[in-house]
Length: 245
Image (cartoon, rainbow, N blue to C red; front, side, top):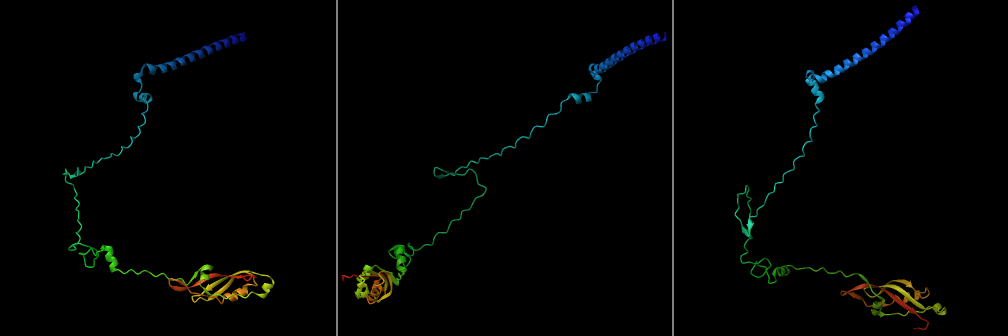
């Protein structure tokens, strides 16, 4: 009997507990809905300051600063004071007037003429004008060209100045060996016409000593340059031939 009573009471408790939970949940939902609907229905009761802070949009950002104004260019119109070759009367008096200083006139020469000019001018003038006066009053010294102490001439020129020629002796050994040919010497002819500084340029060694010995005895006329005798450098050619030519 107790077991049946316990089972029945347990079922009742479960049924009551479930209905209580459903009723509590329903009341809470209704309470929340009422709390949400009240501000929407009675808007006058809400604080306006706080409501406006939520509804008003933030202020827009400040506009960028305007660009700087361009510098104004002042156009000054220049008016010429001369029109058609005539001076125009100025329309206004300038603030500053620049004084123009005239140059002093040249001194009067008393009758015209320039120094060294045509007759009638300052004493010392000549009929040739300025150039004539300068030439007549100034002596131009032309420098004298110095005469060189020594010049170089060709063998043909030196041969024309030859006044004494000594024929060289043909070396006996050269004849026996049938040696012949030409000996070329470098020579210096002094102002007096004598031979100096003989040097062998080309030729057979057996013929060169006889050629040098003979040329040393040759004599020339002085070579004149600008009317003055000068030393001469030249070449002397001596021929050795077995035929005697």
